[in-house]
Image (cartoon, helix red, strand yellow):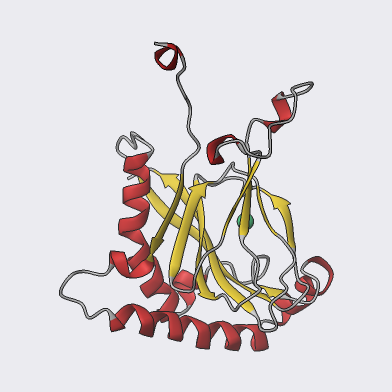
Length: 218
Ligand SMILES: [Fe+2]
């Protein structure tokens, strides 16, 4: 009877799936692998030629490279990223359904898309993605020792004098949750959810493509 008195409300949903899950049944699974390889190839080229991104990263993404503040429209610049945007559509639609969103006459649209290259000792501190509704990352390369993405309980700023939670608390009651992605996977979350990427201890680069979605009128 006591269990009936306790309800868990207002869940924070985080979506994780293989990108291949979005590929139509008639398409060869190899297509997804090819896309990841193509994204890797283009990411390394972007790192070489995006001088504005190189300058921005020098101070704000120490040791690494991100085109976040320079080329953040890769889904309209390069064919592989345009393909990625198409491959992500079913995932984003499903996540919006899981969130029970009523989009009315509007729709979700990728607004920005950029690459991240994290060599050893590179980190990305806690942040949110303002002016967006869904954010996420597709993982291109996650060598052994590379970092997870870590999420924080969004109610932290309201807890004031709350006692800490026990270390053996259930996963959904932990203050921070680390999710370890694999190459070829996509993670989606609501853009207000604070997250970080701790210091990467991999010997090789941890490489990913991140993106934001906006809720736009039809
Ligand atoms: Fe982020």
